[in-house]
Length: 130
Image 1 (cartoon, rainbow, N blue to C red):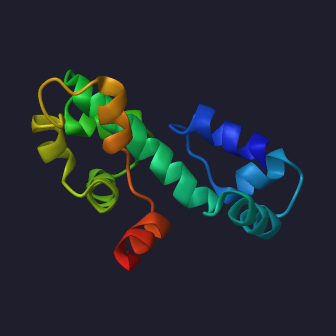
Image 2: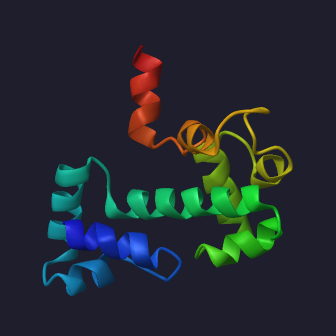
Image 3: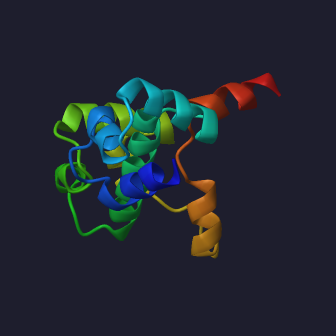
């Protein structure tokens, strides 16, 4: 499962699907999905989307690419899908995030990166339970 996760981390901008990932490790797509979720607590698709959004956040913070350029740079095929997924995970639109990515002056970048990382669906429900 680590090989699959590492491949997603390396090739997040390429078109990846569960079938291609499963073929790379010689298992069925269903088996890969079950084992990946069992190992990492989320589906391969969810992990891929989180990686893409994390990279998009970094590119938007850099500020030299438009939202559309960032969308295609991180592997999305549709600006609408990118914007929707970004808003779900980050809590604001890519355009809003690009305008104001920082938490505030004087906050170290490593703290900002941790505080602004996308929230996965399972983390949302855990936070709401508190």
